[in-house]
Amino acid sequence: FLFRKKHVGLSKSQVAREAVSAFNKDSKVISHHGNVKSSQYNVEYYKKFDLCMLALDNVSARQHCNRVALAAKTPIIDAGSQGFLGQVSVIQKGETKCYDCDPKSENKKTYPICTIRNTPDKPVHCIVWGKELFKLMFGDMNDSMLSASEELEDDGEAGETGEAKNDEESLASEDKDIDAEKVRKETREQEENIRSMIMTAVKRPDENDQNALSDENLRKYAKRVFDAVFNNEIKLKLSMRNGYKGAKKRPKPISFEAIESGELSDPISGNQTVAMTDQKIWTLKQCCDIFCKCVINMWRRGNIGSCTFDKDDKDALDFVTAASNLRSHIFDIERKSKFDVKGIAGNIIHAIATTNAIVAGLQVLEAVKVLTNKAKEAPRLTDGCKFTWVVRDAIGSGNLLQPTKLEDPNPNCYSCGKGVMNLTVDCTKFKLEQLVNILRKKVGVNAPSLMLNDSEIYLEGDGLEEDEVESFRENLAKILENCPAGGIKDGSILEIEDFSQELQFQVLIKHLPESEFDEDSAPEKYILSGDKPQVKEATAAVDSSETDKGEVSKNDDAVLVVETNQDDKEAASRKRQRDDARPEVEQDSKKLKVIDIL
Image (cartoon, rainbow, N blue to C red; front, side, top):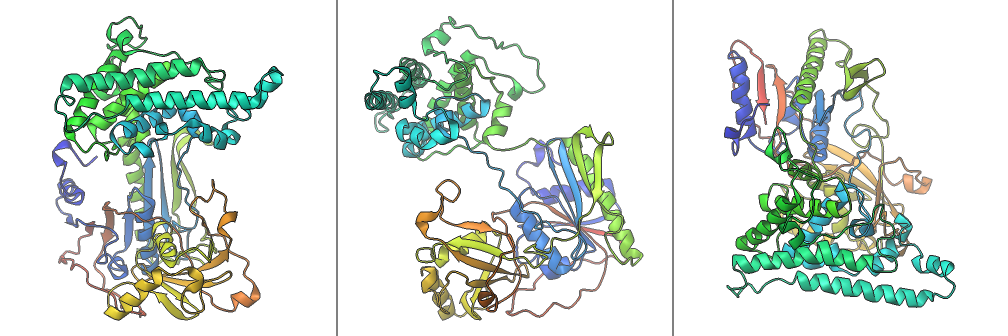
């Protein structure tokens, strides 16, 4: 890696420039510190380069750079790594698939609430539970799944887990004398008693009572919560008719005193030989002490009631690690180190230096091929280039590097092809503002312009008069069917344009009453897809254009671009004036290659 502890807080691009300059003192490197989606790094900026090498860590930034490079017809050497896995590909407009040619999944795993609360069997279940306990004790209590009654949740999730489904009926079949309604009422009362017990235990001390906030009393508060969730709740549920019925192993409650006194045996030893302290598995005694210490530290910091879990917050991570491991012990689940908990709780995969080095080397090899083809004026810049996978275990030919042929562009791609995006909403309730937010957050559009039946219904960016800005802003509050130009209805085709990315595409609107959306698959009452739609002939005659898709978030990652001296080509004509300002690149008389690092 290029970065060391001394570089914390410094600009990545500046540190990278210094490192690269040290490798080769004859090279000339210019660093830029900023957002890769900034307007100064526009299409004309990309046109100055022979190729662009990407090393970004999120979908939004990759989609943006992909689209701008496509518009500039600048080849991309894209790469990424994930633990021991990696890949390198080459993207060139008209020759290969672009980044958007294949749909991107959000890769978010969800777990039924009843699994988290009653039948955990994996470390991740306990870690999610630990985060919910953190929220219950230090954040917004009402947002924690541990604050609500389980009855409604179990009813809603019975179909997913099979654990809560018709418990009363199954009991009735075992014993004809059991009244299902009586069992239901008894279970409801017991669950409410357990929930009441926990909420009483986590009731927060009075912030204005200094005595209540002493270290001694905060430790007593931590002990009270500890015994409520790790001891009393477990015992009470075990005494219920269906307590922990679906659990793989019968849970064993643990008490604060049993751990403190050493009466509870622990299979984990404090003498572990590992490379890093954070990779040690904490003993039960350590978990107990750290649990209490974190409670005191969190109250000393303040903002109780508005705290949120952050994997980079030491107290928050320590608390979740301790709580999740105590929970794991109860259910006989493998405990995890703080290092592992950080990765799971923060949804991160730790970087492997050798993987990154291999991927970077493959990028350079593909760059050499592209530059060689360009020097030879080959008909295709990507001749001889490959899509190479880096795998952890040898497969097929027995190699850890698996090169494959670059695939042709997807004709239905919304960025480089002629695909159309479908948006299914209730046109009688959905607002234009919601649609614009979808374009930003899910499609990756920076500054959307919307046209309906050849009329602009929304536009943003420089060059607008105040009355135009106000008019377009008023449209945002309108229901789709009440928008100008005849309204947005079933079969309407919206023309979307983003000048910052030189991107144009269509969105086909499909109407579906709000009541008909599935609560699980479409909780926000819309469905977005990129498949090419079957448009009615009467509708198809209205408009035609191109499409796009993605996800937006702030980004300040590094982009590596190799440049040789060449004249800038004229900018393509635009519908509206946009900022063409770009930083001047100092030219070298020896025509050395220049590396710009954003």
